[in-house]
Each structure stands twice: as C-alpha cells, then as structure tokens.
Image (cartoon, rainbow, N blue to C red):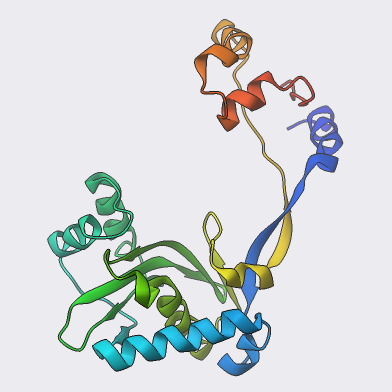
Length: 222
C-alpha cells in the first residue's frame, strides 16, 4: 500500500468506533468478578449453583466426542447452524494444539453446552457456543461463562475475547478498541455497476448495500 493510500485511510479514522474487545482477567476468579457489575456477578454464581444442584452439572475442559454426536447436539441446540458449518467447527477445534473445546454436562453424561475457540499468548478467543434447546430457566450461556472464567484464570489466561462480540452483560466490563470497516472493491466495470445499482440489488437495511451507496466513504485508489 502506497503513502497516498495510507493517507486516505487515515482520513477516515474519525469515523472509527470503539468496540468492546476483551475482558481482562485478574490473578483470581474473585478479583475478576469484582470488575463485573453486581447483577452479572450474581447471575454467574446463581445459575451455575442452580444447575449443579438440580442436574449435577460439571465442567469438562477437554471434550472428547465423535463428529456425529457433535452434529446431533448442534441440531438440538437453540441456534443450530447448517451441518457444513458445524462440521467446520468440529474440525477447527481438532486442527492444532492449543484449541479450546469444552463443555458442560449433567451427572448422567447429557451434554448441555459446548464451546470452542483458540488460545494464543495468554489470550483465549471464543468462536462459538452451542446450548441445548428447551432449558431457558437454566441460562446455559451464563453457566458456561462462569465455568470458563474460572478455568481460564487457573490456566493463567489474561484476556478473554468473543469473536463477533457477546450479548452477555459481562460485555460492559470489556476493554474497547477502535474499529474501522474496510471494504475492498475491484476497479472494473462490474464494480461500478454494483455501486450504481446497489439500492436495487441489496435489501434496504443491508450493511454492504448501504456502504456502497454512501457518498461520504473514502475509496482508496490503488
């Protein structure tokens, strides 16, 4: 990228937004929980204790299961993804050392929640979580986060991040970073046509369609 291109990108920086990136982890679980809101702390403890008492829940830091079982759990989850995506997730957590594949199950071995991600340089990044459908009163997402926080802190992890963010209330304690959307578009007749007719090609509230129509966006010429 040349100097002129960098200058054009720098000129767009005022449009950047602060995005919650990761949760700093202290030396102990109690110290980390102290950085969270009172309501969040309560829920992390309450729902975990409830699931342990009523279902004998336990945390499994290294899950071992066959692909077919994983695909079946995905289909029975609250937000199932296509089999191809679920298979990619399964392959990813088995692709290299340091990958995270953990779960929560009942005392009789029934899987309630699974989570996958990556560990690198004392940072753990969560890529996905699967929760069994039909159990909203147990807040499985919160229970998994309670176990995960405790486990990662014990390993010496210093930051916990979620790919794409998380709707969980713990996000209010995340450290934010500046983010800027960058869209690449080939210099071609097709690209010019795409921009010209974007309002008719894309749905009304589509991000890409809105970006292509936005006359305020700087386009870097290479």
